[in-house]
Image 1 (cartoon, rainbow, N blue to C red):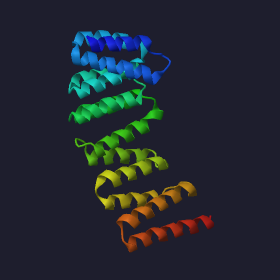
Image 2: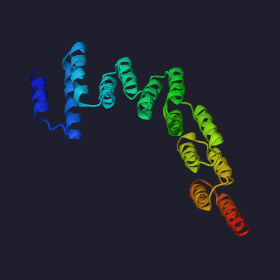
Image 3: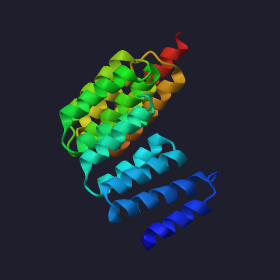
Image 4: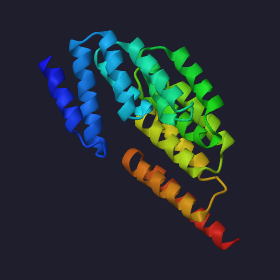
Length: 237
């Protein structure tokens, strides 16, 4: 009760124009209610919280509390409400749910959520959503590097001139793939793209750094040779 009284006093004194302060107090109050109250009292408090905090982020905070308490079903319900609060238009809300499903080894449900997200999200958010999902597959213990590669291959096939996608694919493969030959092959493919000279030089610079760190003298010279060929091709245009 004393903890609740402190939280109530803080709520009354808070300047609600100070977003960070407001969110910290509301989150702390929910943590107190979760620890010392009941499910019903927490729901009652949450109804007050969303009067002062947008429902999406309030549900994020509530989900984190449930995750800390290992109540994963309740956390998923909170994240589901966050998706609904954004009318399905928040990439972050979808990805939080997908991440939780993968952490819980619910791969099939995670994949179904990805498909649902792509169906509902605006097209401009598709690439970042799929790329983040691929990173989950690469990096999470419950993920699959092969599935990550499949997602990335789909993206570079659909958007072959999007150098940002290629860079993210290469970075993820280098960090998580554990197969340097696959990274090398990605660089070999990337430097054949029909993109601007400025973007191409970035790939060659990145590839040279990679071979300097992981390859041998022959590999380094191969990159330099290909870079020279590219520069020569520019002068012949």
